[in-house]
Image (tube, rainbow, N blue to C red; front, side, top):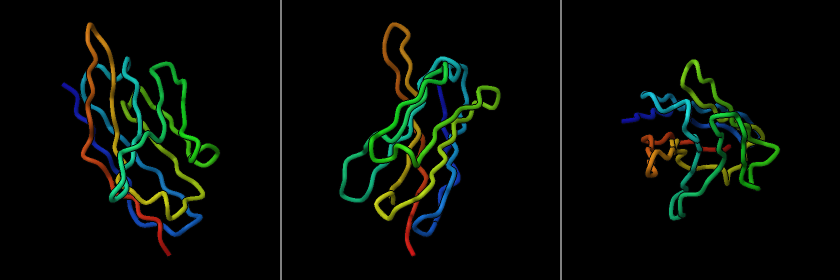
Length: 118
């Protein structure tokens, strides 16, 4: 069983920065791919960024150059540093843990609201 708890969301002005965190419990953190997704009202959930257990990262085109994903295995926490935020970045941001041992497992956090507005 894995529990994911997001934190750090809030209200920020356009052009500002925010860092959200995903704290994970459970023993699979070191082997899991951890991803950030987001879902805006009326839209489908979309992948924002992902990081593998070895630190390899992947980003959606719409955040490349602005967002940075990182992980601290000792703290079992993944961070998403968001810079140059735009109003269209407004969404609920969700953390996902994915790993495969004989079959695939996916776990989700409860989400944290990020609002970019002046």
